[in-house]
Length: 113
Image (cartoon, rainbow, N blue to C red):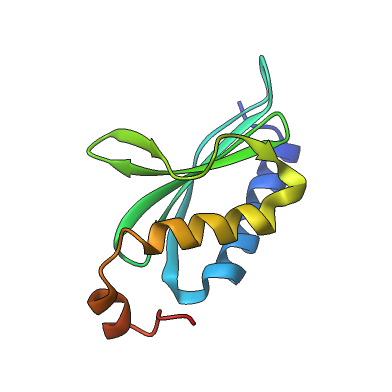
């Protein structure tokens, strides 16, 4: 059962992701939130209307992955401290863009220099 603290943390993470991705991140859903036996929050969202992504927060460490046919594919280098969220989101964005065709990104307003 999620507690209020986990919900507040998840809402802040969703807000931070929304600010970073702007209109390229959508459909944020908290899929898991627990504090027993350890604190864990998992949020899934659509990124660039191309991938289903998952953010996992576990005991104040985060990781990003993409979901593919029910399989979780790690995109970043494992769990990193929550304090590094901004850097980790930027690394995730860079890695995810490598998997999306440039023509698709340029057809949308998502090409970044």
